[in-house]
Image (cartoon, rainbow, N blue to C red; front, side):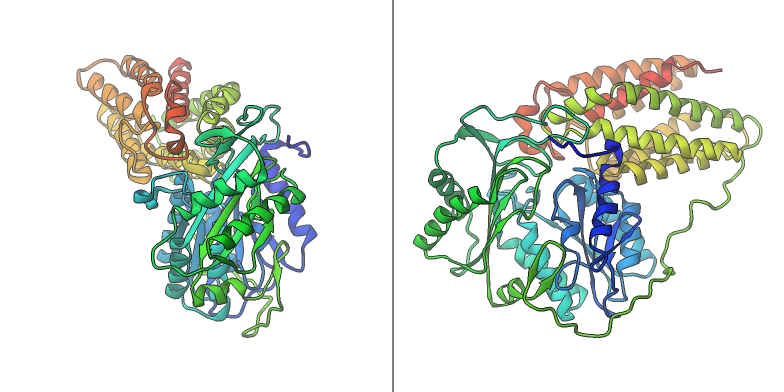
Length: 574
């Protein structure tokens, strides 16, 4: 288990502080992550890796010449927020544009995509690329839905080397796409990992078994089989990857035999002896293989095998020199003058400290009710944090309760500050939503942040809202979530509870019932719909590869929404 921590909620931040203090010659800590200690030459493409923490040396351990220019770091197994990604990018970019590289997970796609939009709107060209190397997470005919695991190391390395050579943003993206298309990974787990502050692992593997097709966020394997010998495991991994060999590829491959946190190097070398022999028997030549811990999952016991079929260009980039805290190869020669200077960039977003519109008349009471609603949400989410985490761990990474608590705490603090300034309801909920998204990160952070801002947008600043404005606000929140997350009813997400709530609330108010009664009735409908998600198979997000395991358990996002709505309904109106 993870034993060394202070406040579990600050584990990632404390880790970054220690990492930067240990490697000042390589990195500087900035809000949201780390960047190179010395800025690269002007005009270089800034390659930024990122994702949740818990995977060291991915992602921050490979910041340095020849690899990444910075790393955006989220909470354990949780996507960093768009605000964090945007901030790190502004610190790292030097005029050549920005490329965000990450695994194909909904929260990462959402948050890095938003950050890229903000950068582009501010005059900084920015692109995103999501790695899809895990062959166990979707069938061969559905490559775009595969998640990214250890193969991201090869994609990041080759793209970073291209940027170091002076390639343009379009060229660096092309290299990432080419490396990803030629990369396949398959992993196994012998035992699950444990989040900081928790006493039980996110999943267990029966004695004498292994979980085949694990995820690196504490997700269990998609199937179980007997754990026999290293030779047998090597055959399983090699045969699985060769069955997925890309077309029109040669015989030279980059190979990673990756430990996931607890499997010892000696064990990996035993396995490598068998893997290397099997590859040679298949006519494949391993080019500078890497055996060790490259993309971990906290203290998970397990390993993964990655093959990247190289061409001349990718091989040159794979072998190119690199100098980072966790990965070194050859001697890096600078291709131009670097500079120590860091400056405020004109593309930086407007400060949240700008004066907020003021509430007048009965709008002040609306703002007060919004603060009380957030307090009620805070109370219930903290009470149910462990329950939500257990629900999420059935087919996900177990962080939903912790993420919701971080988000609501930040939202409430922002709302209380805004209320002290007599902010209008829209401004207050907008500040709360931005804080929720920035602090929580992940999919739920982005969605709840967008929903609060959208809800507030319908509320007047000079009077109490009428029923039409209340239903418009509820509808705007639903639209914001579906537009951002692309989920539909039936996908087994919070939309399965929110859509029935909005429909019921709108219908009841349209029929002329009192607001309190309409809200209470809609909340009951939302709870019923949330519980009914137990019968659904997830079609989106981290739970999708483990869809069958999820059947029988309600969606944690839908349940947490129902909990919040119930707490708000039960809170005295006053």
